[in-house]
Structures are given as C-alpha cells and as structure tokens.
Image (cartoon, rainbow, N blue to C red; front, top):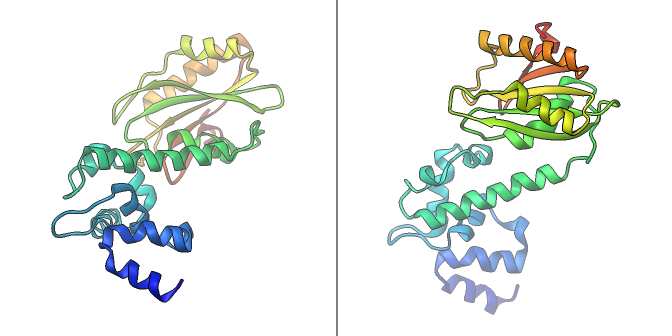
Length: 231
C-alpha cells in the first residue's frame, strides 16, 4: 500500500474503511465486526458501522453461532439496525450455514449416532423452535435424503406416522433414523418422546422399515435412544 493510498483511507469516514480494507488486503484481514459493518453499511449519528457491529457482537459474547440464532426482530432492537440491515445479517449467516451443508458428502454412510448427528446438524443448527426430521437410509445405511416432517413451537412439534412412512415408501427407504431438536438444550427424553418412538418402531417393524435410532438434537450435543438402550 502506498503512502498516498494510506492517507486516502484515513481521510474517509470509518464506516467506509472496511470495504476498502477488504479490497486492498483481502477478506481474511477483516475482523468479524468489520465484516458485519460492511453488511449494515452505515452507523448512527454517534456510532460508526463498525461500532454498531461491535455492540451486536458483544451482546452474543463474540460468538458467531449465537449471532446466527438472532432473528430479524432481535437484531432490529439494536440502535442503528433497522429491518433491512437485520435482514442482511440474517441472510449472510444463512448463506454460511448453507455452504456448510453443501460441503458434506452426497451419500454419507451412517455407522454411528455421531454420523447421524453430523448429517442433520446443518438443518437443525440455531433453530429456536422444535422440528421433527427423518433420515431415509438405503440398504447400505447411506443417507438417501433428510426430510423435515413438521415444525412446531418452542416446546413441541407433531410427528405424523403416516407422513413419515409415506416418505419412506416413496423413496424406497430400507431404514429410518428419527431426529427432533430441543431448543432449550435439554437432552432428557420425555415420556412423549419414548411413546412416539415405540409407536413408530412398531409401525416400522410391520412395514419392514426399521427405526435404527431416535436422536434428540441440541446445538452442542445429542442423545441417542439406541446408544442409551431405550430404543
């Protein structure tokens, strides 16, 4: 960088500097706050875009995973962040999540509960409400595809056995793995979870589509019914 270009950068408003820094030094040279500042574009009368970004990051302990859990409504509560800027942040983080999903092998072979957890992780990470998913497997225990069955509230969702096995039959699945998340982070299996699993296991036995496992998913860990001997 020349002396003249350095002087030019210093003469610009602070919210413009991250863009130029990216152009001159590359994206890896920018801090998280500077990258977010580029997304939001401008700050307030008292705070630059970088300062606003720092406030947002401080609120989540500088944890990008926690930032990804914030909704448009949550982000809009910060001074200087309107709906449009909040949407830009949410959209950028969603693109990052989708990139992780596309990096996975097309046909992962499930050999353990950890494999199943990693396979479903891109779909359930950062969710603030419960969702029920299934992994459809072929005879080699390779994932045919993950399928969302239902989406509910903070404390529950409905899993319709008819819909579950409809997908299994249509895709000629040889086995299933059940997954639902607990946004609270609680890994305990409720009696309702156990009863549903038992019901689906019996239906799978009759249709010759066995239920291999049921995972309770949280962002940090999981509980496997098979590993715990409660399947």
